[in-house]
Length: 217
Image: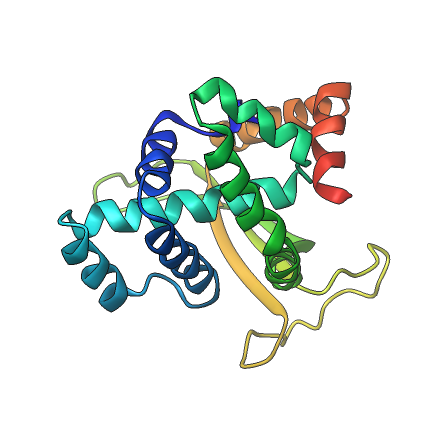
């Protein structure tokens, strides 16, 4: 658990936890508001004046709480795991307050994460063609190959054997599909293929599988 918290995040969490209880509660409310609506500049500005600090400090503290809440929710951190925060010199009282915040808002974060995942774009189809520039004003004779690609993406998960996309399909209000046009040279494409193939090999290792499983529970 402790290794999930970066040094900068640790500093901001300690700043929050060293405040009076009523201030800590306000920070937790700002963190929940951040998840739903983004940073509330008006409230953060007021908080910075009351605490005699900067707006950026308050904003960073709120973001540290949000990161902690999201990471703990994604990884299904237990109360026992949470106790390892003692290695960061957090007191038992501070750990208890943080755990209450995380455990009480876990359901909300799970809902938000699920809604975000539903809008993610997935690969659906690929069109490509080989082009070549054979002349220009500067060079009358040349042969510069270019691979043009069109990626079809869809936020709806579909069967890979589903019929091909309609050539007239475009992205519009309420539609799930998106098209991305790319151009690259053969050398860059070969490098890209090698990177993707290596990533595919890495994805089959036990380490990566265990990491992915923790997000799928």
